[in-house]
Length: 69
Image (cartoon, rainbow, N blue to C red; front, side, top):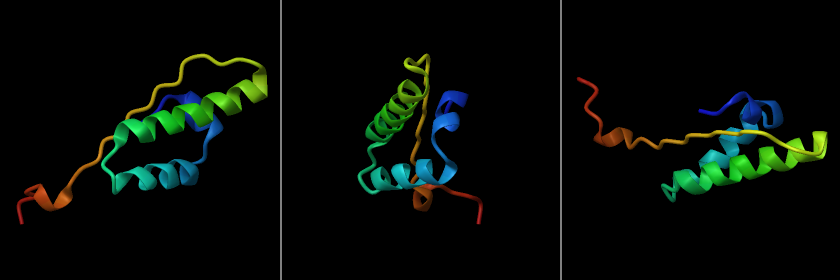
């Protein structure tokens, strides 16, 4: 999940690629930090400044979730 500031400066594919890099390490904090850093840099490049950028990344281990099979 991310605020409009994230989606204005990164595409769905870019976000997916970045999040996938951190999935194997189960490091959602690092994924958030990289997404925010990239969006912030692009925003600053575009406008000379930036405002709020909020991102949440949550990894689920689906093999441990009972989906009522």
